[in-house]
Length: 308
Image (cartoon, rainbow, N blue to C red; front, side):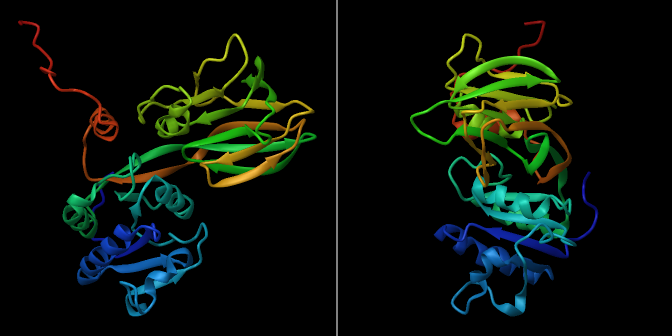
């Protein structure tokens, strides 16, 4: 829904390794502070308040870099690429604060805006003019001997991959309590529609429009007759049983990793808690896809009427 009140508090998440981001943050903060907006940073980005940095301690509040970092903020402004957006999602999901990304990376598929529209972005944030869009997330459980040994979540995808470079893993894949297939493979990716343009895409999976409610299952270099990417129901439970002699690494969004021993079971299902994004543009996903991947659309003549 469109926000109806002026923004009072913003959590900034910045790619501090990017010289461009460190430059841009000074302009963003100056505009927000002039409008009476309180700035919040996490300890991860605390060096931005160093004496030589663009911020001073009088302008900001520094909070622990945990799931409560976005409590009581109106919006989370992300200055960086998709990796920075994923880090911001870890901080914002529990609070429900929407993420507003300004792309300072390469593709920046999760970002809403490019640097050249920064002035309009800041104005919209100050005025609270945005539409909130919810994105599906995944709930991931690792079970050993029937007992949950690890639990995490993902916005883009969870990847279960071999630990040893020279050795495949052997997995049995199950969907909704029924066996699907056994694969000797490098791994398996389970992705959301948001993650369909990330790891799953590079592994040969389909692009899924974000308003579609579904889950992707994409095998990685599987030695099997049937090893195609699949799209399953958002209510499905996908289970991946590791063979006794296999060991793997589980990675959620490429950020939260855990070793998985042989004979373990990984269950993936929809998480009831989404991640919210703030949008000021109603551009169709098709346009975003064309722009981000620089797709060839020259010569398009538009939709013709039936009379033509």
